[in-house]
Image (cartoon, rainbow, N blue to C red; front, side, top):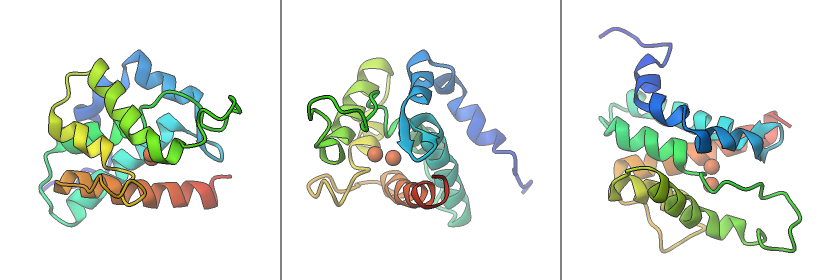
Amino acid sequence: MKKDNNYDEMKAVIADLESDDKVQEMKEYVQHGKVSTYDHCRNVAKLSYDIDRMLHLKCDLKVLLTGAMLHDFYLYDWHNDDGGTHRLHGFTHAKTAAEKAKKRFDIDKKTGDVISSHMWPLNPEKIPKSKEAWVVCIADKCASLYETVFRR
Ligand SMILES: [Fe+2]
Ligand SMILES: [Fe+2]
């Protein structure tokens, strides 16, 4: 099989999503250190793609990569001091992101679940139920740690 080092397959799956105005808006919000929410989501998509290929998981790439690109689609800057509305960000944003993603895009339940379960175990009742959800949940933690430690 031809090795795809340029993520062409991944880019093809998320091309429409990436050109969306609201997805582009994530570039305006800081995620960790110098990394925008958009770049963070793209890092998680890349890592999810790598994990799927490395472990031969044969994930549904549309579900996996759409879920990864939209997993933090909550569309606000959680660092802003706004009277405390975002104090519970860690606990609430997965649900917010899933709701906003469902409203804007025609995503199925499985993709919605990838988004809403990505903060497990912080949201203990939202256990990832598919291999796609597990991959995004793990890739998010690895990418977040990397971005926090090395990209400040
Ligand atoms: Fe998140
Ligand atoms: Fe994230």
